Image 1 (cartoon, rainbow, N blue to C red):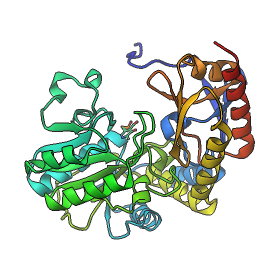
Image 2 (image 1 turned 180 degrees about the horizontal axis):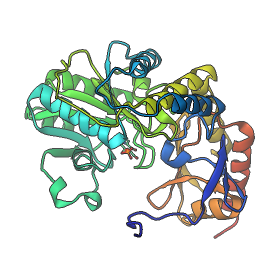
Image 3 (image 1 turned 90 degrees about the vertical axis):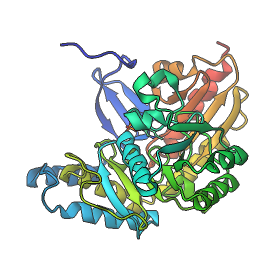
Length: 377
Ligand code: PLP
């Protein structure tokens, strides 16, 4: 059997990793400033993470959700404390799309309504509901185009109000910071307006923090920079530092009933252990503070580079929009300088490094970036 070839792959096979470094099967060393789509929050193979997971594997790797699992409760407690959402409840699942899928369902159960308001350029995942709420017809099959999602421009409160006034919407779904689109942050006043619209029209405010959450922006959740609280918050990616886990944080206004949601693998023992290790390391090693310091450092170092049209973002979620003529820069960083970065569109480089990236690693990246952008392509 062959693999179903639906996404491009770099011709590099990592076989070993540590912190921000990856080694391929020929022993070549790479710097990882992408963390496999923002997944690596505490660095590859962090000793605390490896120790906790190994110990748990030898106790019990998996048993289904038909029995008590105190690790889930421990995780809910710690996540509540670190995120500030202490009085919310947690539903555990396996990925970002699945978290959004459950969030949409909860909003629809709660309000009795079927429609969702989402933003142009947003990305919420590839399951049916999540992909319907993702403004990209290329990744939607006819089955996903339900007509239940309306897309509006980020920042346009008047358009949001005009839609919400129809009284048909169960929820507004919005990323803490738009990631896949190329790192676009909603303004504080806009989020405050969106919060008010949800309150006025009795809709649920869902923040998708799958990419921007878990300390990446320098606060636990990116939307909290605005002071606004969500009714539902979805998480995944950095939550397990690579171990598949997702979660839905749910306001106390929602009443849980048996059968409403369910899962086979969600919140299994190993996944919870990975998530607990991540929270402990973020706290113990002050990684949110490091994200702020290192993010500011990257922006300071690159702000005068003439190849850059705009550099934006918060903490370690950085978008570098390049002027025309630098379309191959990302490939050159990888193949000439052995540095992994992310992309968005043709001319945006996305930096989503582990939250414990250090100055020395950033200096290597900055020197490589400056050197490659000085040479005309
Ligand atoms: N939401 C956001 C903001 C994302 O960036 C992604 C993935 O890139 C998802 C949801 C989907 O997550 P997953 O790939 O874990 O299903």
